Length: 276
Image 1 (tube, one colour):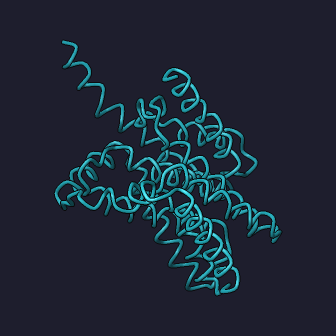
Image 2 (cartoon, rainbow, N blue to C red):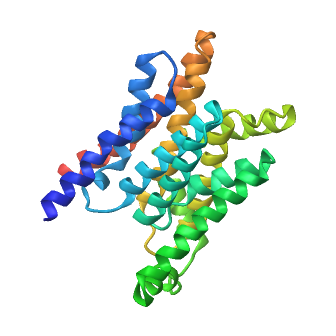
């Protein structure tokens, strides 16, 4: 059973890469392939995909929800909207801290002043979560809602984890800088219905929540996998959108490739010293 569980959890990487391919979009296959590999199987993930843990299952559901919502933004078909709602619930069901896409969708609907859709999405998701908690019983509710109340929080722990992760995945910070600039421009020019604006909100929310939760006792490097994934997708989409300007596209692609190179630089000497 443990072997089967590890095989299933590691095979999810293929599904995640397939979703990343569609999230990046564009006509340049080289960029899409590179982004799919780096976002779904970044060297920093190490052996996390091979552990029988729900992290990558939840991330797969979340990324699928993001794709469905972006499809809804482009095509305005309600089926994609409700699909994003169901997939957001599936992500929460897989791991209850994965509410990033759901929050990003609610924030985007609020900024876009689509209050009716916001009520439908937030209300529908809340009903599904409430029904799950009721059906799960007292012990389930205790495990989900109250089991982490005894955990301690520490600013130093959060900063140490931040430096440790970002130093090996610098594309997170670079993606955040680009996302901040895009959000400011989109709000000023009132272009908030663009998919990249939604992805910028998603990247900012994922980083902010991880920065806070990273101070919890027991926090580890897997906490930064979602922002690393979304940063890779966001930067890759900006590369694809900048192909008309080769210097800009090359610079953005260099930002994307700096992440695995930084990880190799920080890791290989340690491996060498350990083996020697």
